[in-house]
Length: 185
Image 1 (cartoon, rainbow, N blue to C red):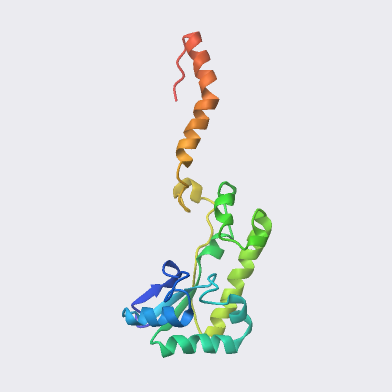
Image 2: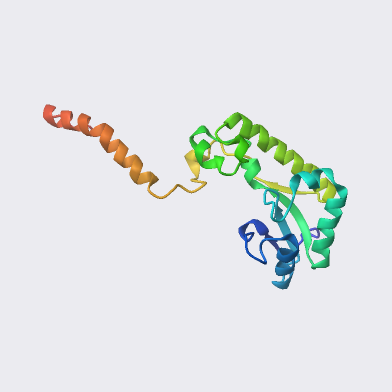
């Protein structure tokens, strides 16, 4: 327990297009002013972090850590939650998860998976360059459609599904009624 860095904050839930949430300098200053000592960095958010540059440039990583340190913040780890999720997407979730991928691989599950693997590997290299020994990720969710609805269902999805069931089953149920036979579900 001596290596816990905190209190820390996952920045993905705060990153945005308006200050102080749209730049690395400003968001680390804000986090420090809120009393946090560490931050987990969303590796996919270009407003805060350039993943490819961090994987290839020690100078970039030194500057990145320097800005955090100057603002009283320690980088605890990089997050590859979204890219890791895309390593193993159940086909039922293809469309929903496409939004987390780069535009050029959307609609192509094989290309998206290859892109995701490369992203996680880039983040591992960047983690080493940043002096980090841990990286946060999701593993993907081949079984999640059966256990947990994430990403959350779009509004109206369940209602639409029941409407479609009614459309498909109504002729069958009407025939069952005509035949005097109940169908038991």
